[in-house]
Image (cartoon, rainbow, N blue to C red; front, side, top):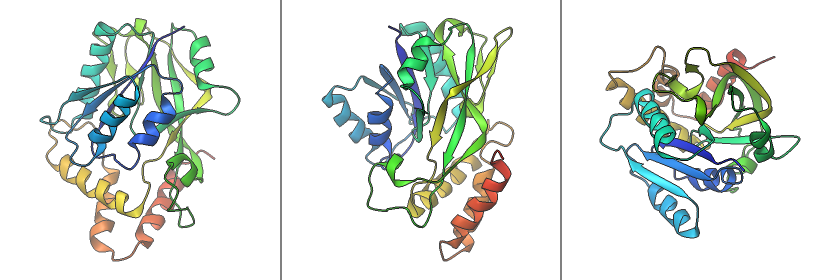
Length: 253
């Protein structure tokens, strides 16, 4: 049986972190969590889940500016060198690996370990009609569309010191490693879960990106659009209007 390790860099995700852990541990054996400066109850929730028995290891990177590119590549190498794993899955705390026809774990157990796999994003979008009382995010938000972006799943044996995980974990840079689509799986992505969470996330990230000297090309630029609406609009219509326009550009027809 293969050992599957995920790793996640997060900051203030208290509204979704419990759903993320309980759902994804159905197929994951160990989670590496990188705290990039949480000031809410995210880490407290994770510590309670550890007490329940979930195999979670937390690393403190709170003194490092938000630099996803550097941090994610640092921990990619750390897991490859220090953990006895077969598969490494970079996950954001708002992502849930899913499969329509079979168990996710079964797909991961049977796939070849000589390729890097691309899993397509299934973006789930907040709508006015969603049930605000529903606490489990995967049940609360029902509307989704197939996004043009992918995320990677990496067999540990392929990770070398020269491998580079691209910003957003959408692809890798490495010579002579085949990358193929894994069509059986999709990555459910719940970036925005409520209006207040959307506003907070947008403004906090925009402030971070202003001070981020090592930002990769176009990284986080879409947040500037959301931030402008947050500042200029007094109602919630901007959120739904902006996302409808974004869906038109990113949706696979």
